[in-house]
Length: 164
Image (cartoon, rainbow, N blue to C red; front, side, top):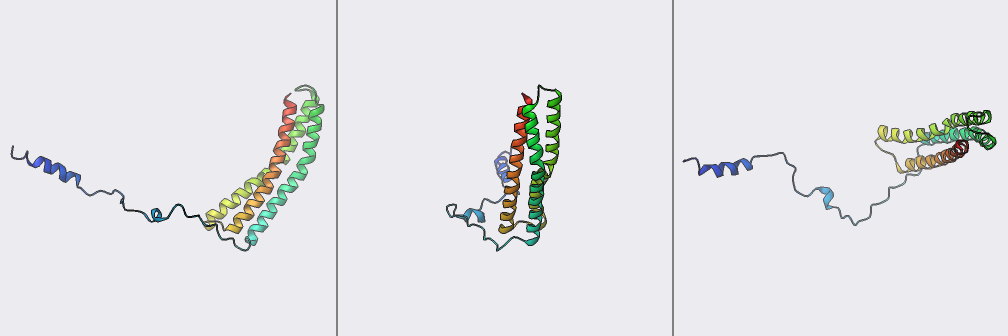
């Protein structure tokens, strides 16, 4: 019975044990006024010459792949328009030409992936990308992506015709 008055005191003492809880003090980032505009990154004068060379090579590869793809895609489109019913000989020939066009288009899709990988590799290797380098990567990616979109649309058009 003598320990009974000490029981609440023991409970309060247990609550005051040291913990590893994070501090509730304001953090440095919380002192920044959120209404202030975020400054644009300073653009370097020019992207690195090595990067420019790599990007030009990838764009050239995509352009060359597109030049090889377009005649095949056009031939596949013409054959698909003249093709008979599904699984007829003319339909099979159109499918084969379309398959050849898709295989050639791989040069463009690889260039798209290689530009993305180039950016990721620079981030990993250098810890970031300078603004001028990023601008050059975006420009090359946009150019190659446009070629890729046109190719994908041409393939979809032929596939749609052959599905009828």
